[in-house]
Length: 437
Ligand code: URA
Image (cartoon, rainbow, N blue to C red):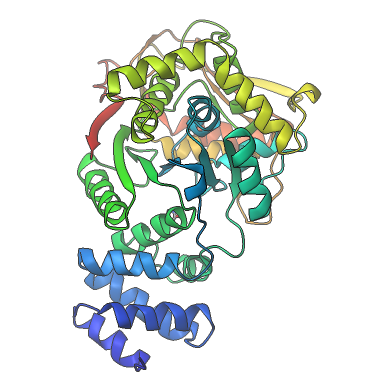
């Protein structure tokens, strides 16, 4: 059906509800360069200001999904993936994919790069010498069949509409709109063709959603799109007002995951690996349950613990590395310098602004200031103390790993704004605040 783009824009401008045909016309037209950026930008702004109904959001997502190749993985039986809305030190995917695959459930994981102050799974994996995250779809599918897990970047054939829309949103001030965010996240996930999806929706100073209510609304909308698109979908809402685990930075986080899969504990006392292990095991349990390998969450949890502790997750991770061209024997890159950040006074440690901690990582070279930036895989931050821990003046709170002193100076200044030391212990939200099914 033929529409006038200006009429569709005006309809949304006056808060009208689009039909599926109108959304199909817009997304197809924009993907194939028949609708220009200026009209799409006007429409995006109208969506930002007027919002979308739930069924419009579902239709938008499905139209975006169908703008490119949609994988058919039905020959593999039940397949499960996980998506996190992003946080600091969040390295769960690196353990989850092999662990769940070791339970006999294929995990087709299409992951992303660092976005803003948060890290990305692809960047972390690329810190392992030779790791290829740009397989074509044929190799991606055949690896899934052979070893049960693959972590790759989205290929060019998948969701072209999202790629164009995201670039336009980025420069037109239209990123932060619930229906547009949901459409973007879910179209990419639905195109992977998995049967079930677990979402880890984060809230707090280090997350895109700053409070629980915002995160809950996002989680509910994402779940509803997934379910209405024929996928079993559930979400955990988890805190992101303290870094996950002990390390932030690509190779440092891979080392931490290897330690966990090898059953080693954190280097010295203080902040250990317990939160990242707890979250990973809980996510794994939900994925195992969604994948039908356990009939209840309790037995799924026991299976997840067993597969982590008996080395099965590590074995599968090594298989995945070899299949994707990586050589763990080469070791991980190490920084030349290590610098201490000490407490200036005595009291209780309180992380107040994790975004600044993420930015400190970017200053060190662990993330990008510009899309074209080369990462320093060895750079990052070790977080030695937990939220609410009592510290003395002069105690070491952080280590900065770097290869450049002026970068470290900028990171140090940024990091100083990410925490305070106060007289009262801060309140701490639970790691997993809610489950949305
Ligand atoms: N992540 C995405 O993939 N898309 C958005 O719009 C926001 C976060």
